Length: 227
Picture (cartoon, helix red, strand yellow):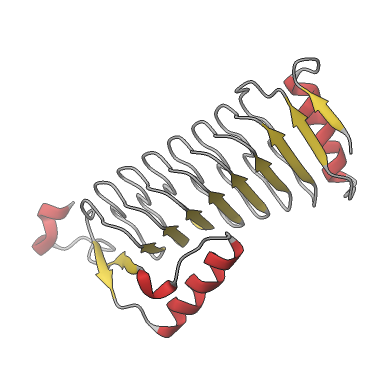
């Protein structure tokens, strides 16, 4: 198994090596050691490559991921898996602000807690957080699923569109136009699949679903105080 030691190899060379391997669709997995909180590790991977980061990373780890599997054996700074297109990103520890922001697809699993604005403007990504999430999560979330096994902070789902939010714990407050919705059989099925993929020990029936009331889609004077 190839190993890239970031105490010896510069970040640019690390990412060039990984991007080259992803481009050739090599099946051989890579290990990154001594990441030392480096920023933008394993970004822009465009192929079915498996990368394991042995330690914590800084901001924008695994950004713009497509088809690759990135596993961080530690915590991640702001913007992990930002603008992710497909593939899988797993964070063993905690994630800082705006995890999975603008993600178009794929699966992001955070086994610890996520900070504020988790899933902001998500566009199709699936995010499963084993712990809690901070305030303004799923702000303007357009599409995809956010699953939270713990609690959610203030203003959950503010101004969201058609994303589905599933929370097992408490929600401090809901954002503008976000309401609790009925959990129908199809939602239980979606949730069960995501929990299984994320290795989460929870039952779909334990969660509540939140979504858009669809009152902010078009301007309406009766709802002017909500804008």
